[in-house]
Length: 262
Image (cartoon, rainbow, N blue to C red; front, top):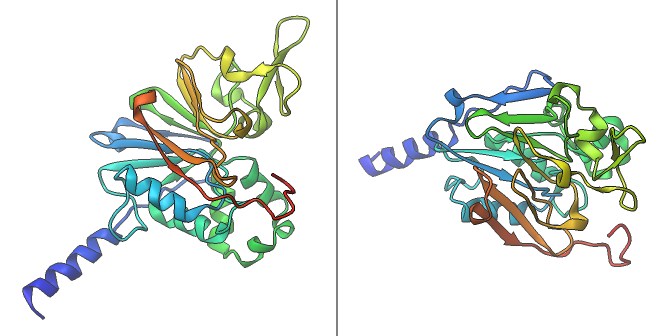
């Protein structure tokens, strides 16, 4: 073998030498400064099975290795949940994220798959590793260096993270208030106002889930669900959260021909 051949082989080996997260079934995860030091942190909104667009987004953000399967060593990528269902390449997307070295929080669609694994035809072909991966995902990931929490749906103001309910973290869109001024999580539009309107910290929050409102940018939060699978965009943001740190990619429209479930 020539020296050029040796170099190519070594390059391939290095490219695939990616450490994968070990969640250990913890409900809340923290990435300390020892993990994120000197690394760019990029958070991605709801992918919903749009793997082709995801790869293009990660390339645009310059966080994907040339093998197009693994995250670069100088970057941390965190997915804000709902990586599958609705789009054209659900199982491929699940396997890609699981093997890429990226981090992920669980959303309502991950919970749906865990609770009803036989309810989705594509998921019947998932491996045991795929299923255990989904079951192990945390509901929040805190990035200490940027004082930022990634969660799929949202957080109730005034409550510590460890007191937030699963419904709040995976399904809440709005907040209403009871007669005593206590915030109540609302899943469906029509009552209350968007929860992020009332969020004043102390942490910044990056979330997805609320596609109807598209991109949401506030001083202490940013919402990244921008309707990728319905012909919108797939959106990510580098931390710290800022409009100038947003990267996005246009997506195909994968709505069923009859327009159902769109």
